[in-house]
Length: 119
Image (cartoon, rainbow, N blue to C red; front, side, top):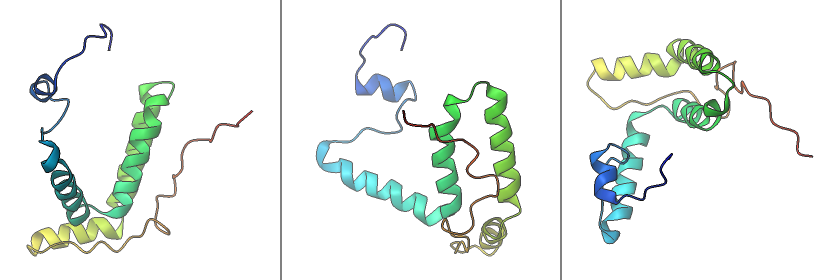
């Protein structure tokens, strides 16, 4: 970021900035496979909250504010029906069927940010 140096995909991979490289005709199948892995193994509410945290938290005034949000979300999600299902499905060696819905079961601390006023 500071030097503005351009680097190739192999360097991005070796530096851990990307997880894999794909030929153009293999890109969409790989993206769909990753999306399927997320959908099959992660609770929808957790996905939604994580996406918002990745989007919103970098703009916090201090890292402690991000830590507070993260801690509250983890505390809330640990008490959820999704957490119980995740543990049960793991112990029973079966795929999870997460009961919580994004439309109704977001944490009570969500949203934690204030929308900016457009002027």
